[in-house]
Length: 149
Image (cartoon, rainbow, N blue to C red; front, top):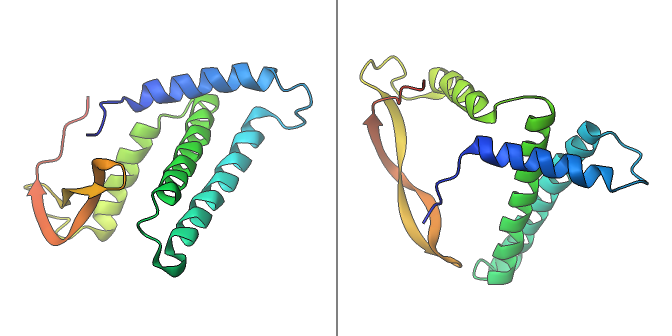
């Protein structure tokens, strides 16, 4: 099941780790921000590459391939969170702001006063147990927007 993690805790941990680890790389010629920007680009490319390998020849049941694919996503998230820390950026607030923009732009019934349209998600058995979730196609519900305080 999904853990209950606060993005702020992840950002603070990644930031502290980045500061500590960056100091221990005496041959590092890049400042921390540049390092993490390039890390996002590089690890994002690795995510795409691992996905390509899974799709090659229809190897969707390759557990090792899925492990690598998910690991690269975690590497990308680590660089994004370290950047958020260094730039004093709240990615949670950024997400909600961008989601609101996208809902106005793309949302079905975006002028609906009763709530926003959200895809229903169903739990599926994935290569690592029942923690893999996928959107259920053609099923939507309307939910009340959560008030953030």
